[in-house]
Structures are given as structure tokens and as C-alpha cells.
Image 1: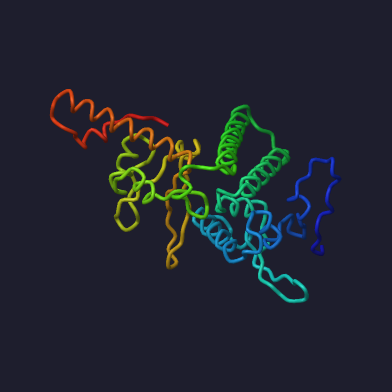
Image 2: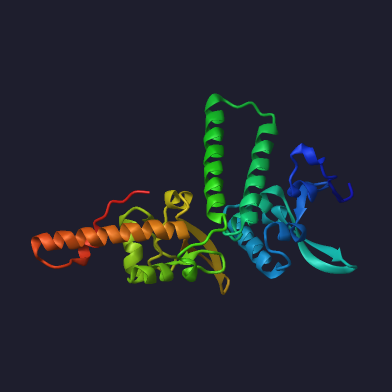
Length: 281
């Protein structure tokens, strides 16, 4: 079967722009990475979009998936000249969106589209399900919808008093968050572990690399990005502007309570009290 682009559906059919560029060959449906790039909010920035794809490939490989099947290397012609691209399956397109810039509304839309298509495929496979399996699928779908809704809320363009601390993705690193609180990163992340926002973890090299809990990420307070340095991939935690608001409020509340307690006992301020909080997500 020759490679072909599926004809776009009529305007009132509920089709999305992703449907209009869906392709099909003898191996099934797929999307061209070059055509997805602007729809993921990367315009003509192929270099940064490739980084998302490479990180998605790394994650797929680490999970035992067939990377060659999901992310096929292809050469496309543009204006008669060949150019590198990828043949992305539905799953590959979704994994790439998961590695994209979380601050881009286009990324949130892509996640929603490919997650929905995955659910449709699961329902169309025709296999009978037990009530327990149906319940599990429902819970999984609900959790995905809640996570995507939180990402859509975070991705909405908005003015923030933390803009000066945000990077190009609209996120705040742990160093910047520590600066806001006038403390250091180690003290900050240990305190975030104490209040159940972070989970204590150790890096592959034995160092301390505490990361946000899933509950804190789903609430839209933090996110984890996979970054690569000299061929080594590692997770990096970032706070959203909304997360900074919550953290700053909790920090100031603990400082105030510690100062009041010290005033009562007449012992002066004790930094140890900063780590006795029991704030929950």
C-alpha cells in the first residue's frame, strides 16, 4: 500500500487538526514529525523538537518498548530537497507530547488528542472485558483526564508575580525557588520532603535528588522534565507559578508559627521548627 494522507473530515464532524495530517501505510496509521512540529508549538524549531523526540525514545527504550517500530527514521522531500523526519505512531506522538514544553497550550492539546485516540483504540479492539477490567480502565481514563485538565490550567497564558524567575518554559527551577524563600536548595528540598510535596530519592551517582510526588504534579504545583547532558538523561524538578504560590504560603506560615512558638518559650528562633510541618497536597 502506498503511503497516503487520510482525507480530512468535514468541518462539522468534530475532527481536529491532528486528524487532517494523519497518514497511513501498510503498517498502519502514523504522523510525520515535521508536520506535527508546528502543531506542538515549535514552529520551525526542528532542533528543539528533535530533543523532545529523542527524550521520548529514551523513555520508550527504558520501558522495554520497540523504539524502531514507534519512531521510524525517514527522509522527506521539501521543495525537492531531502530532510530528516520521523514516522511517529500514535503512541510515539503521545510520548513526544509528554516530553514537550508543558507551558505550551499546543502540547496540552496534543496530549489530550492522543490520549483520547488511545482510549478509542482500546475500546475498539473488540475484546470482552470483565467488570473489574472495565472499572480499572475507567479509573485510568479518569486519572488521565484529571492530569490533562491540570496541565491545561497550568498552560493558560497568565501574568504572574513570579515571571522574573520563570525560564523560557514558564517554569521555576529549584535554585530560583530557593532564592524566593531566601534559603538554599538543600534546605528547600528537604523541607518539601517533610511536607509531603517531594519524595526522598538518590541519584544513580549516590547524591540526593529529591523529586515531586505524583500528587503534587497532578495538582499542578510541580513538574519533572527529562534533561540530557553529555549523553546522560536525568530528571529535573520545576515548580509552576501556581506551585510557587502554594510553597511560599506554606513556608511563611511555618516561619510565623516557629517564631511565635519561640517567642512563647523565650528561646529565640529555631530553624529546626521549619521542618515540622505536616502540610498535605
